[in-house]
Image (cartoon, rainbow over all chains, first blue to last red; front, side, top):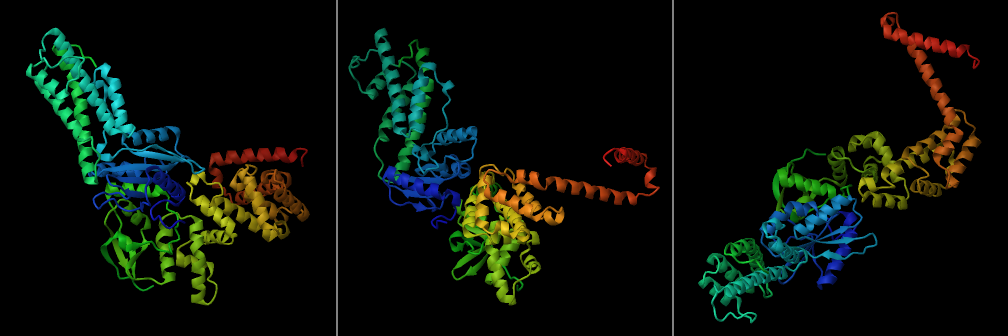
Length: 282
Length: 318
């Protein structure tokens, strides 16, 4: 029996050894801490833990993609607010039925937990890298958006939660809002209701300047335009790389907040545009 | 063992070590998961038991709970601290605490039983009897015998069992039950027809192959080997035919135990069973009283039997 594990089921030792090497190679990491706590406040000891500059990368070795430990402790881990990213390593031959397995994979993705399935020959790839848990968002209800927006929302959510690029997800939301506001301004200008002279489409204009002008002339409800402006300004604050876990935690909290604000704007903006007699164009 | 003086304390998880004498070496993840869910839901219901050894606490009872607390990163665990036992006391404690409460794998028990027998031998100056071992460990004599079958296995077969035990029960092929059934049968063969199992490890390999390939379908088929082996005394089957039957089973990879049993002694055992049943029935009939016959249902059944017997005994068969 390998002596480096105390808690891990002996039948998963080989899976553990393989996953450790795979993750180290993929992220260029040194030896991890084995079965050690992240900190005193988090009620969970992952099988492997790497303390990186801007995140804790934890690997839980289990017999299934969405283990009981994660299911039970997820809320506590998220509540800690620490930038923790989890990857579960599991044997592909695991005795789960096809529907149980699919359910586990779905749950893992929904909870932002990465996974690596390892086959009987000891081969496997990280299929999903997971996201830092403070960024975790539950699934999005597409019925709250107008039909034309749904593909954009889906794409942004996929980047945010499923592809492990939350900043790209936020960027996508920002681009859609900018495009809607721009098209609103074009329509208002054509109709003669928007008379701001520095807005000469298709020439570029700074988003904040354009929104200020739209607010001044009350093209649509001022409060939503104010939210669009603040969203646009805030979005830039989360675009730099964190230098520590504390900074990463702040950035991630902000990033998640912005993503939520952006999606809420997109729930309300189309209705308010149409209310003023304009078309909702992206 | 002296009367135990114990105290209850919250102990830091870092100060605790597993008991090297714990016969249980495999804790399956499913079991830890179940306990984790339960501890999260209702907390720890029973403190663990430990003894102090130098600057560490060694677990007497509660390794699974300790592991679950570690997983949950709890700082301390409630523990009853007991005086340090001797090696033999420690082992016997393990058996009495764990073995009686959970269903241990026989392999797990057998693994440590060897050491208990050794220590007991030193203490008594002779081999402990089955009765003494049973009283000390709380294990039934039946389990002790099963353990001895496992203990007697060569190392390579023990390794196979250990590997199988790591798998969930339903995925195990060469399980403990497989070896216990096979070894039980081979022991009977050895006692009755020793020449047939002179090369016993080769016989084991053949039987394992047959089980793996489905030639031997059920574990209970091994019991038929015992029946063939004892057929010279039970149903007067000729000894040389028994040897020939085993030659077939142990040398021909394509022949099942069941087929050989059917070809050789099945009918004889069938006859014997019928004869025994008839004899037992007769003994019971002899005890029937007039009072019993007042039951109309019984009377009708007996008359029916009489009619059937008359018909049978008057037929050409007799």
